Image 1 (cartoon, rainbow, N blue to C red):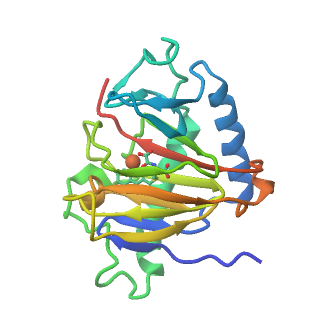
Image 2 (image 1 turned 180 degrees about the vertical axis):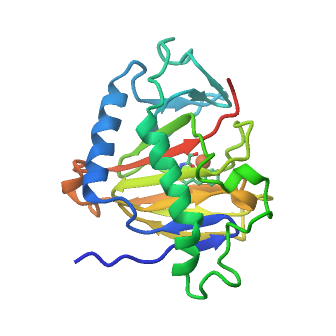
Length: 241
Ligand code: MD3
Ligand code: FE
């Protein structure tokens, strides 16, 4: 039996929806990520400007990210243009926003959305930022974590848009640390992210520090198609054209 937990607002605009993806959807995403990992720009350990190498492996779709900008061509890998951002993924992103912020999410929260659990406060933010129908992600970053990989606390601020980021997790669970927009340190909230979980980061949470201190090997369900490790796919609006 599948027990579905309601969406939980970790901080204003940061909503965790456990078990959002079905097993079928997870399998489909794993297949798509496997194909993107092959090319046109293969998955790689990103090299940082000061020579460090990320333990996570990353492949991009739509726009290519290299620290700290987006380009159409992957100058730091093989110079090729990354795969197009597919329409079905943008549709999934809109459904994610609608389920995390929409009326159903508010109705399901403990207080019916009447007090604190109201990320989608009409008029509270720039009009289109929370509107699922208008949300039009143009980039996905796909991160693969083996059992030892981690990601230090950072902000995502290379996008020229404050539209929300949609995050999908598949495979091994991890410890996700969600901080604040001011500092790399406390206060932060630790959340376990498991296979199928959705997390949306918008509004005041869009530029908060966050990281992945630890993956829990062996916690994933091989039925997703991923026998080991963790996949995270984030959708973004670059604001570029
Ligand atoms: C909060 N990825 O790709 S997903 C990243 O699990 C990244 O691979 C982590 O941080 C991962 O940049 C964390 C959750 C996440 C992603 C993007 C965010 C949280 C975010 C952007 C802004 C605020
Ligand atoms: Fe990030």
